[in-house]
Amino acid sequence: MSDATTDLAAAILATARAMNASGINRGSAGNVSARCDGGFLITPTGMAYDDCEPADMVRVDADGTAAASQNRRKPSSEWRFHRDIYAARPEAGAVVHAHSPFATALACQEQGVPAFHYMVARFGGADVRCAAYATFGSQELSAAIVSALDGRCACLMAHHGMVVFGRDLAHALALAVELETLCEQYWRVLQLGAPRLLPADEMTRVIAKFATYGQQGGQQGGQQG
Image 1: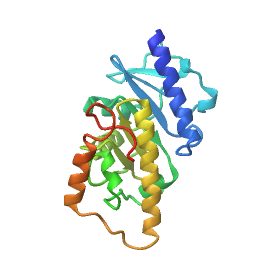
Image 2: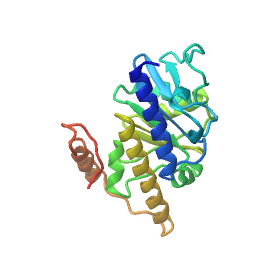
Image 3: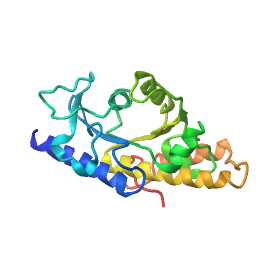
C-alpha cells in the first residue's frame, strides 16, 4: 500500500471500531468503506474489527474486482452496494452500514422514518425510506438500496439494518449516529400511538435551511444545534 492508501485504510478501521464503540453496531456485523482513486477500500468479510489491522482493508476497483494480488483478505460480502452507491452518487466519499438496534427494529417491520421530527430533513428529504428486502450481498439488494437513496443520503434496509453515506468517514459516521438516534426517538413515539407528522411545506423549508447549514463553506455538514 502507498502511504496515502495506508492512511485511508487506518481511518476506515478506526471508523469501524468507533461504530462499534458508539453502540450502533456489534461484532463483525456492518461494514465501512471510503472512496479512493479508481475504486474504494472496504472492511474485510467476517473479521472482528479489533482483530484487524490497516493492511486487512480490501481494495475493490470500480468494476467490482478485488484482485488477490492487491489484497490479503476478501472484501465485505456487501461490497456491491458500496460500489453502486459510489457509482450513482459522486458526492459520496464514505459509506457506513450498521445493524443498529432501533434502525433494525423499524426495518424489520419494513418501516421507514416519516417527518415526525424536523431532523429527518438532515438526510435529504421529508422521510428516510426503507429499501425493499433482498438477500444480503446480492445485486438485488444493491439496486433496492440505490433506489431508496434517491435524493437521500441514508435509508433503512428491510429486515437488515441501515446504510448512510457522507462526504468523508467522519461525516458518514456522524450521520449514522444521528439516524440511529432518530430511529430510537421514532420507536418511542410509536409507543404513544399514531405519530403526528410535520406538514410538507415545513419540511420543504427545513430541507432548504439544511442545504446551507454549518461551517462547510456552503456544503451541508456538521451536527445541527
